[in-house]
Image 1 (cartoon, helix red, strand yellow):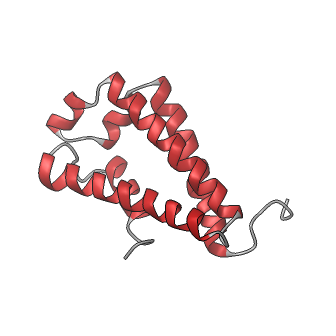
Image 2 (cartoon, helix red, strand yellow):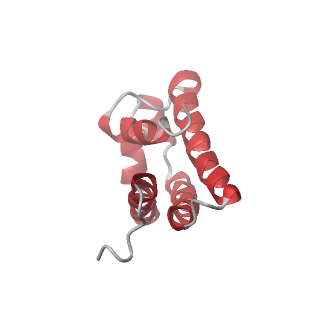
Image 3 (spheres, helix red, strand yellow):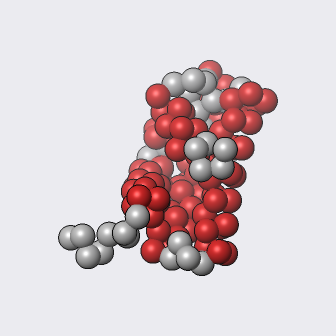
Length: 122
């Protein structure tokens, strides 16, 4: 089993986060309830439509592909920067939805993406 795991801690973490993003994408694609848990404010719950959930799923799958590729190719500067960009975009999105648009409330479903996104670029 250790033969297919990346050697260092950061690549292992990217592998985990990428796998979780892929699974979250599948969940959101099949059922918008999961998006409504992330966008848990009174206005966010109403705006988390089935279309928004599917778009969220596509974003999760895209970021999962980049993160999984980077987990095994950390030496490629372009891959590393693209991966870092996925976290920056996610963090900016979630923080702006919370602070400016009011669709994100401080709830367990919305805190986890922010907690995952912030450490890599601070």
